[in-house]
Length: 493
Image (cartoon, rainbow, N blue to C red; front, side, top):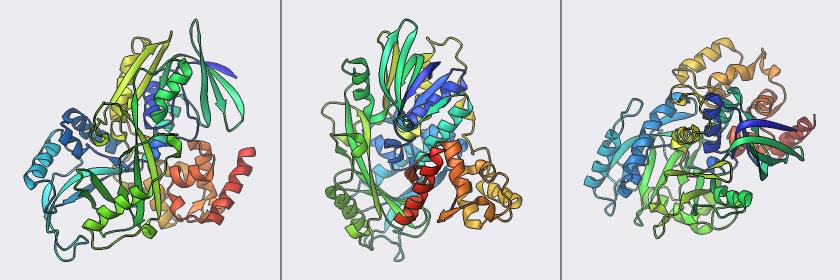
């Protein structure tokens, strides 16, 4: 099967889906291909924050911080169901950064961009009831936002699809050929085990940590940019403290580690930074990394953690633009776009972070304007992502409850926080709990599974349990086997 599009985007992470959505909304015909699942790599292995990057101020990266702070406001309005403000407290130890330095940084952070949804910083004091070590008496507080990173990717893919883009998951770009009128792109569909061919005018390579190696493989020429692969690992442990706020812990090596409330029962702790060599898709946490994170947490908290307390861990490989001689923690988290004509245009995206994906996409479209003179104007800064078209989550929950009074409270809350206003479409014509079909355990019903298959490109239990929901934390191996068996049968239909 062959067809022609204006733009073919390689990579179903946050940058690729953001570019596909923006381009489709400006009138281009778009195909997005991803060799595995959406958010199957780096984009689901982040610290799950929408943030300006307070620590980047130490590297004098003021423009990046300002850009990210402005995006923080845009994104929380676009997807209020999966992005929420969260307070971060910075406890002060005797060897921490001086208080004046923290205060100066927070003053900049508060004022580099206009704040509408986020409170300003303040000084805090800790008493005997604090979860922190008794020696810690003072600290500071500032605000950022927490995000379900993999769902943010899925919502951008859904936005792209609803604007007319073709989204092909499990579809790997294996070869390109230059024809007179553009590129002939060969894809291999791993799901159906068949070749798919698309013709396009422009290729966008947004394959994250594979960006340089993929470009070299496709063009048979060295990539124009060298990248550094930096592994960041996180651990998930039982909840470390009461309250909705997070902690930012300063270490004596200059790095910082976050302890963030996660999924009610857990705390997310991260991240590390170390150079990585190998397949980015196979990165795992080392014992040294987990020991490093545990030691920092134990230095600050009364409760002492051991390796056996780790519930889950994950590692993501970030593709950073190589700045020779710089420590990995000092390398800029900003992005760069490289355009080559070989003989037709290929744009490759290097670097970037979750928070700035939308402006990155706008930048890519600016670079494409010479090839598409009829390109429409910017539009993503004022349009909600799917499910985000509501004002208050409490009002949304109340409206869904009124419409479907039979829906169990826990399910209502999880669905609204996951799907937002799309919850009504998920429920569809169901009139009782029994209409939701087979119950796979932990509040996962057949109706939701079918919705994720038909609407959000879910194919496996991993897709559903880890990237569409976070139910993987509570599912047993037996329950996963039952779900996998159901999906296998469904996929054969």
